[in-house]
Length: 274
Image (cartoon, rainbow, N blue to C red; front, top):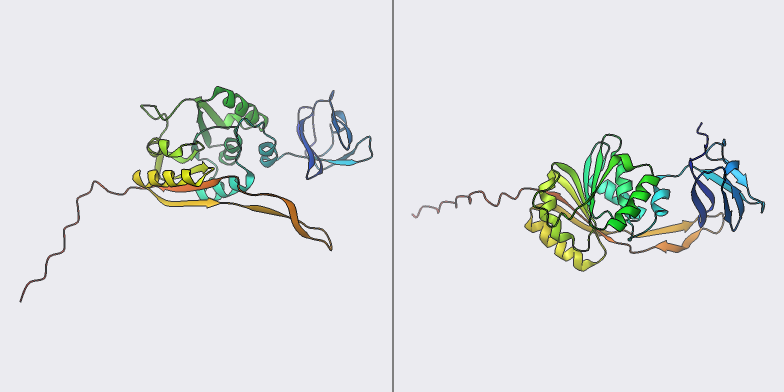
C-alpha cells in the first residue's frame, strides 16, 4: 500500500478537464474552481483515495504516470503527444536495457517517455543546441524522476567531426531538417537499428525519405495517427466533441547495408548458337 508523503507527486483528479499535477508540500494549498485542496490533507492517504474540498466537491488522489508528466510538461517547443509516443515505442520495439540517441531534445517529453521504458539498465543520450530549451527540458525530466537515465549534451551533431556514440539501438530525430543528420545517425546506429523522425509537414517527409535511401536505410514507413475519444455514458454514448487531430507525421526506418561497393554479378552466358 503506497502512502502519500510530503514531496510526493499527486494528480488531483476531478474530471478529464480539471486535474492538477502537484508536488505535495504540507504548507501549500491548491485553489481551484472546485474549491481549495490542502496538500497536508493528502499526506498519509493511499493513492486512489479522495478528498473533499471546501465547496463539497471530491477530488481523487492519483499516482501520476509518465503520460501525466508529459502532458503537463512546461512547453518551450511543441511536444510529441501520447498518441504518437505509443506508436513510436511499438514500431521501434523499445525495451528495457536499450541505448537511444535523440537529436533535438525540445521540451523533453519524448526523452522522458523513452527513458521510462529503457530504465533501469538502458539509457537515453539527448543532444540539442538551444540552452534555454534544454533548461526547460531538464526541469521536466527531473520532475518525472528520469534524470538518472538520461544524459544531456549541448552539441550540434550536424557539424561534429566525430560521432560521440556508436552501436545505438535506436535514434530519434526531432528537427526541422531531419535529413541533414541522417549520415551522422547512421554512424551511431547498430545494424538494423531503428530510426524515428518527427516531421510536422509532408515536404519534410519527402526530403527525409530521399536521404534515408541515399544512406542505406530500409523498412521505410511514414504515418499519421489520429485519436478520437468517445463519451461513454449509459444511454447516450457518442463521439467526443473534443479530439486531437494532426500533430505530426512519424517516419520510421532501419539501418541496412546495400552492398553498393560489391562487384557486379557476372552476366548470364549467352546460349550457344546451333
